[in-house]
Length: 66
Image (cartoon, rainbow, N blue to C red; front, side, top):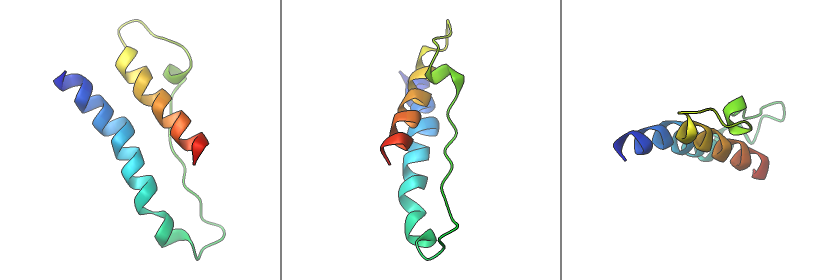
């Protein structure tokens, strides 16, 4: 569980917190944008990498939703 929480903490929660922090700073810059990084692992399961893939899938859906 500790490893799962670490992976989700970095990949998903870290992305979410940054996505929430930056828009107020960027709103006056029309050329500004946020870029989140996902992975092919979000689309195709890789043996032994299920939690990583799940975290990147969460990032992908979060980004699409925003």
